[in-house]
Figure (cartoon, rainbow, N blue to C red):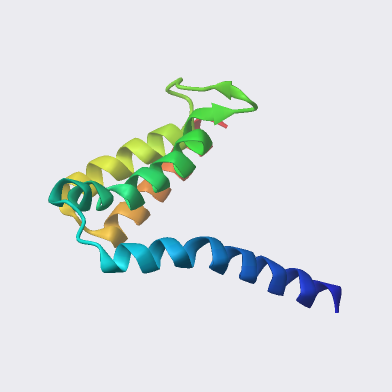
Amino acid sequence: MNEWVLISGMAIVTFSVRYPVLAILGRLDLPPALTRALKYVPAVVLTAIIMPEILLHGGTLDVAPTNPRLIGALVAGVIAWRTRDLLWTIGGGMAAFFAWRLLFG
């Protein structure tokens, strides 16, 4: 029972914080520069979530060529840039990660 109260409370708080902003923005015409800038928000948020996992190992910065996460991310970036294909990007990045991890432990 306590779990449902907790989940319901979190849903109410999340809704009450976000809905007024969305309701107000739905009635306003945003400047074109702001609309263009908002298109980059998902990519920036995803980058902010992923980059610490790629670059930090044990709380320290790891940009050595033996870092398999870094190599996998670089390979995935190149594949995405050249092919624009999500499946190839994921597969190539994972293959590079696992191959590098086998090589350098």
